[in-house]
Amino acid sequence: MRDDGATTMPPRPAPSRPPPWEALSLVANFLDAASLAAASCVSTSWHAAFSDDHLWARLCRCQYPSAIGLLPLSDSSVNAGDRCSSPHRGFFALFHSAASRGRSLPAPRLSLADVTFAIDLFAAGGKNTLSFAVAACDAGVKKATGGVFQFAVDVSDRNAVAGPGEHWSVRWTAVRTGLGVAPAAIVMMDAKVPASRAGALGSGVRGEAWATEALPAPGCGGGKLEAEVVVEVSGEERLVEKVRLGVLLDCRYVSVDEGLRYLQHFLL
Picture 1 (cartoon, one colour):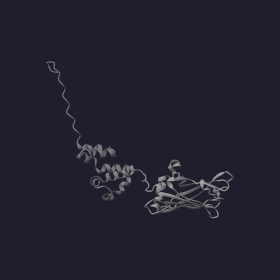
Picture 2 (cartoon, one colour):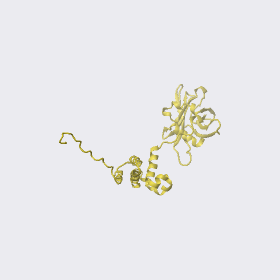
Picture 3 (cartoon, helix red, strand yellow):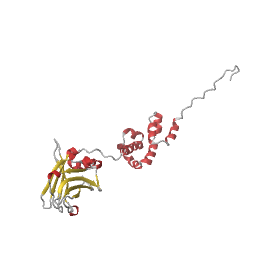
Picture 4 (cartoon, one colour):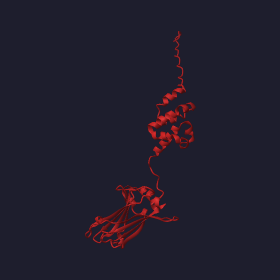
């Protein structure tokens, strides 16, 4: 305060100076990948500090240690910009991108509208008792819980009598149809119904007879997919009322997309 009573303002502190850029490398050791990438975009000096290869090597060793083994391929495996500054950063970005995409598969190139199912049912004596073809999109898949690859076709108006079921045989063929495309087909099943699955029925009694058969594996290697055909019948004469078709994996029905991805190996 001055002698004349006037108030004086205290001196303002000098503005703080930014830390020297050499100190940035000390901070960088404590940042995660997202922070390092953002900081490296601030300025030229920050880019030099936060893009140092040893920082990204540390992150690679922590999160994607197997990426270290790919360093001999760095000349061709990462893009040129990352290769010049930090090969570890390039591989970290590559592995992080792959992990972000997850394990989801692409949508099938085949649709239900492209597929027709043909069914032939033969009685014990070899006589054809029921045959029909139905577009997959019209076969009742929407009625199945969760949109699984299981279809139901009502054939009660055909008055087809299967007779005793000890030696029924069922052939299920999937056919690619559509205008402007060459037809292609795969036999999903050609099997007999076991006697244990076709019990005796009384008048008015309803029952089921079914068959399962392993599906051919696409390409090399084994497969565990099974085709299933279930025939719903009623009465002693086994009047066929409904035919259900499905594809199973480990006793569960696969999804529609899974079934279509399987079929496109053979039909496209």
